[in-house]
Length: 125
Image (cartoon, rainbow, N blue to C red; front, side):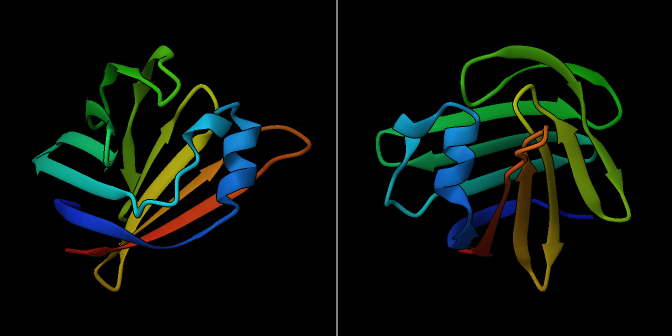
């Protein structure tokens, strides 16, 4: 599945609840997040940005990679693609992404009894 491209936020659900669940309330923004995915075979660089802030992580599919979460927590994770869906477990949530009708659909699910599911849909720009 080709993820490469630049995408701008179109819709999102449970954004504020998600930020609260992972302890990142200060990251709340009204700006439309831009996500850029650079893909070279199994190697990815994933960047999310708004004016004045950006977060980038790089990884190789099916290999343990050192990464950093949006909260600055360093961890080792292994990204996988199954049925066209990219998945990766972050310390604070489980992340999936897929291309649906040429849009990038990302979902983050926090663990536990009071789990929050955050969904973001972004269109190509």
